[in-house]
Image (cartoon, rainbow, N blue to C red; front, top):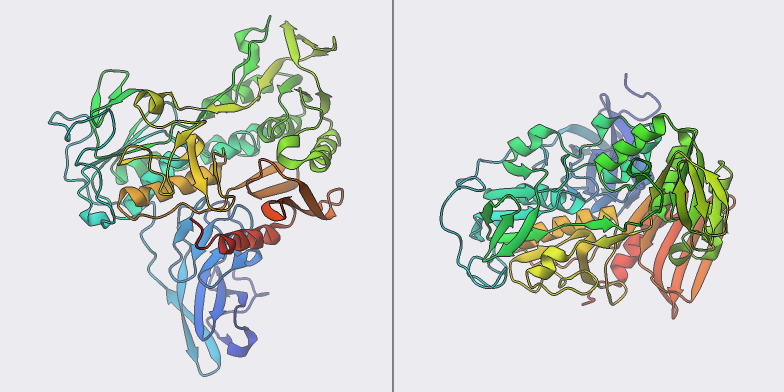
Length: 540
């Protein structure tokens, strides 16, 4: 039934009730619709984000975009296109008509090419078919088959694009290649046993038991068939040679352009005395399912590591009513990321939900269900989750001769030291225009946006990657959002109150704003994103 508390936009509304730059929420039949005004121009868009159904009315509208307050998805107000991840699908748009001083919202407009729409079948051989390879050369460098600079999608001459990595960056790149009209051969190689999934939920709702398994895949199986994406699961690449990807099973696949999105691997620790069935890591869907299965019959758990992910695991296990102990070598959780005041607040938030912290300590050994810490403390635990960080998976890139330094080095277009070979996600170390430094971050939204930018550059767009790094975490009923990148700072400005869960923290170095963290101030976080973008305009 239509919502009668909102104006029926098909019946019209006064033009002057909508100020220039403003937006209003109404209905069109059963749909909730946002009408926006830019001068005399009027636009009408769907009211909810296609990622996690965030209310766009609570977000930020600019001259050209409508941004979600939850996770910063960005849509075109003109077409509804999902311009930047994490949303991949467009929002609906409607035709708006002004008659005199009255605004009417009419019929729906045709949507832009959606990620779920099919493309024409590639007029090329399927992946792995016999035939001559592109021109050879050094492992992955040079070669006439690299896409022409500045070429349009239909003029790049690409016959085969291979993406190595089935995570956020890989799926976003594959989707964007098809959305941008690339109709050639497209292969997505993943070492995982599951198709690309909603990885942030592995430590959040799925682990907590509030998100069913069917919600986890980013795309249903038919998507890959409809999009003619050759998805290879449980498949590892052994080497890159002469513009060919060689798989561990001996198969060789030629490529004209390559995206490396191999992600990161968990740092693994030896726990003396621990059985293999009692120690877990969390990186893949299979990892999360294994922890869920173990937790079903458990009463207590130890989480080693007080990182964002480690503490999300702790919160999720508390939601399952387990007794949870967090063991970490630092004195304050997340000190290097948030600072002492915010780190202590995060600790107190978890303690208020029953999590027990053992800081400045390490796990020394396990004897059955007895865990001994470095200070001699003995804890009872049915299992242990190790979350002590990750390392970028760069061995493939390094062995292929690509430039590597604490990650795979890429330029502002995300291209590696080899023409036609790109890197995105956790492995990419790129020149960030906002800090003026070369950085590497391990954020889901960054990986997706890099995958999208790399895809457009594979097609010759020459688009600099300038997105502001962003991530979010959810502890119980409290959301924290972090924008920017501050490895070091000399001051933190605090506006509001962490204890009251209404706060903005600004991280500065030499008076320059590097990052902003907010608690329950989603609109301010979006406004900071726009300000960062404006400040970097023209930056190299």
